[in-house]
Image (cartoon, rainbow, N blue to C red; front, side, top):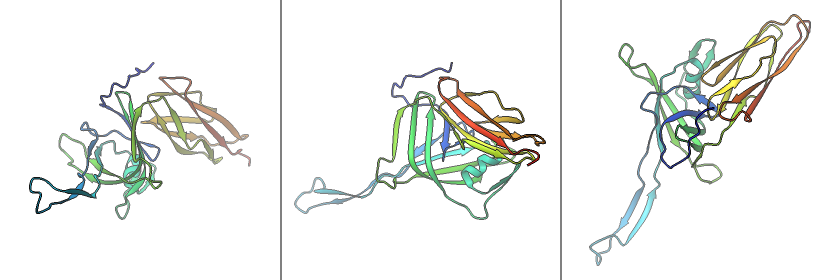
Length: 245
């Protein structure tokens, strides 16, 4: 069983980052820097009152800017923070820089979950090749106002959870590989894999490979079970066309 922390208000340690439902790979040991600009105000002074303003009007609200450096530069991770395309082991950067938008979830190692409803993520490759530190993608995430006008972010206790996206995959009879993303509050195990399929797990991203099928159609499911609470499961449905279809 994984250790379960009681939220005592001290928010530290980084277990996982999820952006747009996908787990972001390992970041540098500096973790996530949460900063931003202070609010701006107009202060009105009166000739008769010389010791303080008579009115303070907010001109601009404070902003929230999160920064981190992604150092696990596998193709899917690069695409998730910078866009572009993936072809097997090759990532091709986009022709122009893009700003990605979506929700953010941060799992702290001390028992808290931070959820942000709407973030804009911009990434750029930075660093040195040949020194002590690896090349990385510097990521900046600007917190945007939710479209429904609700609270932009929240802190809460981490409740055990696990989900898979998408929940079903179909494969061609000639065989192919596809990926799904697991969003989970902690480590998980993989259940029995149906005949004809193999699964590779790398940092929460699942690659399922279907071998070429020369017989009847293949169908089955595989379960992903949360280690801290085995009642929490996510099910992925697999299917493959018959070889004679």
